Image (tube, rainbow, N blue to C red):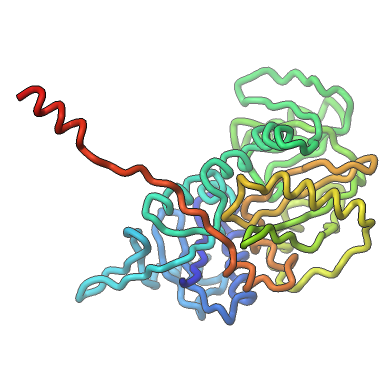
Length: 343
C-alpha cells in the first residue's frame, strides 16, 4: 500500500497545510509518498517531489502538474491514450481546518472507498467544534474549563464575569481570531475580531502562565502515545509561533515531569482517543491546574502530524490501523415483491 499525503484545501489554514506537507516530505524521504494537493478551486494535483517547495504554490505553478480526479478506490489522471491510475493508497489527511477537519474530506474519501489516516466523520465533528469537544470530554471523564458560546446574532451577556478571559472562534485553530480580554471595555472588539472568521465563538477563563502539555498518539495493534511536549509560548501561543512550529522535523527532547503527571496525561489522552479516533493520529493539548489535568483542545490533524513527538514516525504512520466502515448490502427483493403483488 502506497502512502499519499493529501494537503491544501479551503480553510484559513491552507498555507499551514502546505508547510506541514513540505515538512513531512523530509520526515518521510525513505517512504517516497505521493503528494496530492487540493487547491482553492477544489481541484486535485499530483505534485512531483522536486516541486514540493512553497513558491510552487504561491505562484500557481502547481497547475502545471498532473490534474487528478477521484475514482473508486483511488485517483486517476486522464492521458491522451486513456487513464493513469493511482490506487492501493493509504491517504494521510493533512488538510488543516475547514474541509480537512470538519468531516468533509474523510466523507469524500470514504464514499470512494479510499483508505485514509484521518478522524472519521463522527470524530471530526466532535473535535472541530470546541463546544462539542467539551461535551464529549465530559462524557468520557476528562475535565475542561468552564465556557460560554455566543452567536453573531445573539446577545453578548457574559455569565463569566471574572477577567481575564479568552475569546476564540468556535471551530478554528492556529490561534486565528483569538483575543485575551482583561476588561469589559475591550470585549466588543474581541467579539468582532472572532466574528470576522465565523458566526460562533467560545469564551473561557484565561489562566496566565498556566502549564501546558501536548500529547499525540495513534492506534496500530495497540495505542501508541508520543513523547510529551511542553510548548514554549508568550501570553498565548499565537499564529506566527504556531505557523513556524509546524515546520519542525526534529525529534523532541524529553522533558522532566513527575511519573504521576505523565500517568495523568497518558490516561486522559487514552480516554479521548479510544475508540472514537481509531484510524487517526491526533494531538491533545492539556492544561495543568492545581495538579489536575484539563483538556484544552483536540488537534485532530496536528501540524506536520506532530511527527517530531515520535521516535520512529515513518514506522508509526505505516502501522496505523484503519478500520473499514460497515456497508449495507443492497437488494431489490421488496421492490420485486411489490411489483408481483401489483401484478
